[in-house]
Amino acid sequence: MATDPLALSAVELTAALRAREVTAAQLAEAALQRVSDLNERVNAFLSVTGNMAREQAEDVDRRFGLGQTLPPAAGIPIALKDVLAVKGVTATCGSRILEPYVPPYDSTVWSRLRAVGAVLVGKTNCDEFAMGSSGENSAYGVTRNPWDLDRVPGGSSSGSAAAVASGMATWALGTDTGGSVRQPAALCGVVGLKPTYGRISRYGLIAFASSLDHVGTFTRTTRDAALLLSTLAGVDPKDATTVDEPPADYTEGLDAGVGGLRVGVIKESFAEGVEPGVTDAFRASIERLEGLGATCEEVSLPNADYAFSAYYLLAPAECSSNLARYDGVRYGHRTKEPVDDVVQMMMKTRGEGFGDEVKRRIILGTYSLSAGYYDAYYGQAQKVRTLVIRDYQKAFEQFDVLLSPTSPTTAFRIGERTDDPIKMYLSDIFTIPADLAGVPSVSVPCGLDGNGLPVGLQFTGPLLGERAILRAAHAFEQDLGFELNPPLLAALA
Ligand code: GLN
Image (cartoon, rainbow, N blue to C red):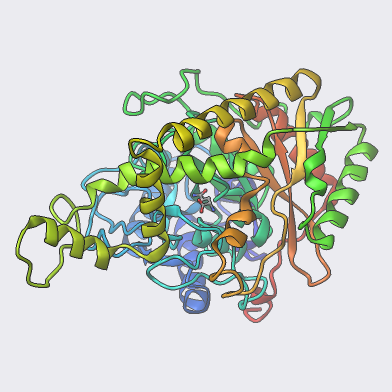
């Protein structure tokens, strides 16, 4: 094959595989080679599953050789955030507390991908238990942004975003609880999709905040996102919150364009603190959509301002409950220090195993759930969540999709925000509301800022409205023709 297969979308690779212009084994080798060339610098992968990848690829090639027609995901190199369980492969969640934990079962997302012949390259780095916006909260070192190695790739799905941006994998999965798929996708110049809550099973996703956790996708193109969603979506008896809808092909209708589409431009997108480079790219994107035939009008989500505060009560509350299971008895790490009793053992284990951010959230969550404060904090935050849901319902009476930047800034420098948690938390002001409401939302690249760093544009739809946002994002992407070519790759050429 003449072109670099790692610069192609899965749709293009599927065509090449079916035409036998490239084999799955060659693709797997190319991805593994890219990982060995770059991972030392980027730190996107925590484990590389070379043997598994080779075996899967061989099996795909064997079936192609028999003349079988395989699903589009067959042979596509994919990376999974290290919070998703793969049987027999270490899972860390970016934490020391799980060490050593090897899941005895597959997450539903991986069993679906495995069944259609996707090839696992490895497990990706992330902020500890998905808590963070920069990748700097991983116990295994920071992930670097392929567009500028001194900058963060965003987080918490830092490694998944960096892996796709640098071609170490064609696809990756991440999780989005407050923005952790869309924000790193924006900062790395790739497409990040967070579907409707319950669209993709959470079985085998190691929980952060269960009512907010969504599995999401990283791809080079919107069409790939639609394809990957078609592979993953669907009811799962192992996750009672999954939506009971028949399997669907989300690539259908993707080319319908945005003519007549009613786009609500979220007024709060122009708030203070948004970088000028982001605002410029955002304004240009609105014009582009209008040029393509969409009607763009301003709309307000009046409670979006409070969504942020509500999220930072609800997510820690749920995490304090979910992370109570790491007690040195049931899973992973147990202190080696001498202890007098079981309480001391747990305290020491948790003290050693968890990082600062996770501890901060557990303390905050435990406090907001405690008797006497529950109504004032947790209860209040739940009410705000309802108001945010109503804001969306009202907006979608008038509009088909809503538009905002994905992140108020482009990739910031490593270390720049680590001492200021609030500033770090603000990275997610535009992404959090969709997690609270469970509505689908996708980030697509919409250009570069003055420093040559990617800017993300976010389309949000009503519940189960993935088709509308994918169609809009696809039309935008086709017209823009963004080039995913981070400077890091120039050195490889
Ligand atoms: N950055 C947000 C947080 O730290 C979102 C994380 C996420 O979506 N997993 O909680």
